[in-house]
Length: 231
Length: 382
Image (cartoon, rainbow over all chains, first blue to last red; front, side, top):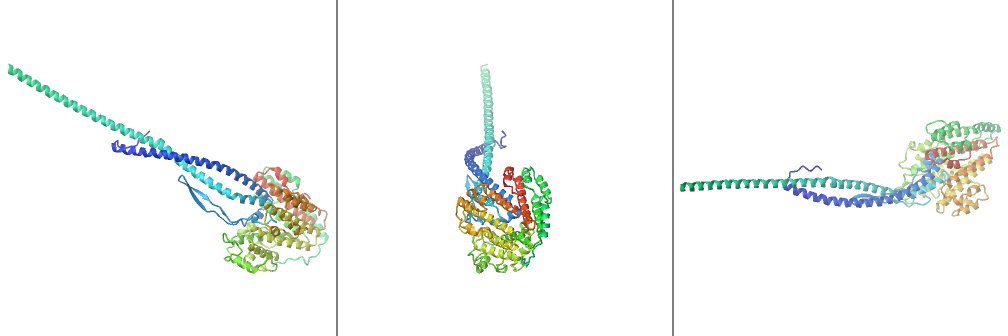
């Protein structure tokens, strides 16, 4: 693992140790966030699967009826029948915060529908169209709920991916690099320490040797002087 | 104003009808009959259907739907020209004009309502004010287009033309301009009266179905009167039977939707052999009661579906059976050479053929099983 290019100083070591502590705390928090996001995501995906199945089944029914109606009507007749459309509806979009992810919340405000409120008359259209229109109308809130859930799932998935990358980056890149750099600086500082100790010991040794030499020379001088006096 | 009347019609000499019937008999051979349609329902590609359409006299083109519409219009135009008596073209084309009028009115009125506000009682709506000032009921004979308030922000005629049907008694542009400019006396009186009735009905209850129903009621009233004026009992009975079938369909649809009281009266069409009260008294009835009520009428085969109407696929079966009953009625006029029966029967057969071809094309594009298509194919045999 490549270490960070820094000066191996005690200051740097302290700074890096602080960074490592923050990184480890961040890593733990992000892991917790990822786990919680995953839990929410899996719950959401399960409900989403059920809702999607329901919507798809009902849409398939509606399309089957619609296709049959389409089959016996000319294009112009069908277009004209559906030209007026439905009464307006409001769709205020709010947001909700899930683990710091802003997800949309749709609230469907229908104008009051009557069951028989159709955009076309019955004389010029086949009965298959009624069932299709009724199903499309009934299914609209579920489709919006599905859109809301799928967008939430998409946003959560993006956030999980982002968090996972961050966790991995901390776990496999930043923390090991910091640890490696700290180890390197510690070793460097220890080495410096040992170098200093050795140097001091060497100096001390030299000084001792020098003192011994001086003492020996002094002793020799004293001895020679004593012999001269005796002679 | 293009006033069309049958008052001064001269009786057609028998030889004229003999000629027309003979020509149509020659054309009948090209209609795709039940056996050929059944084979076509097994088609694996749209090309096979296009080839069959070419054999049946439809123009070739890249869009089968377009060819179908053009071919049908051409056949109808050919047969209309063969009618030796005046008045038939009016009866045959009036529904096309009614369709075009609905397109124009829906486009004009769909932008009139402020969001969330009802049309009636809305004092800010000029259209609502103007209409309510001078209206009592939906259908006001004698009132002309000038009595309508001005429409705001209307779409262009070109943008609506793709939804229009052609040919029609009145050119689409003429109807569009007459309604837009509220010019009285420029279009067929039926269209003028229908526009006023539809806009008034819409002012009372701003729903598309109300607008369509107002036009349709006036259309079928006009048609029954014009058909009666043509003096052909077979055609009169045929038209009345068609209205009966439509009314039974309306009754079952209203019952299936659980519509509030009054909706049935709005949608029922005049001019049937059964009075409207025969249907109105069944408002709120069960399917079994409907089946019982029509057990002794020619609608019995259809009314038998009433108990299960509303279940998936029953409406489609109802539609096919209604068309087949009409086709059976058409066959009762097959032997009449000196009258319009053969010509009208041919037009009906071509309409059924077009429905069958649309069914096959739609099935091919949407992966519907051929067995299901065969169940829905209309009878085109003569």
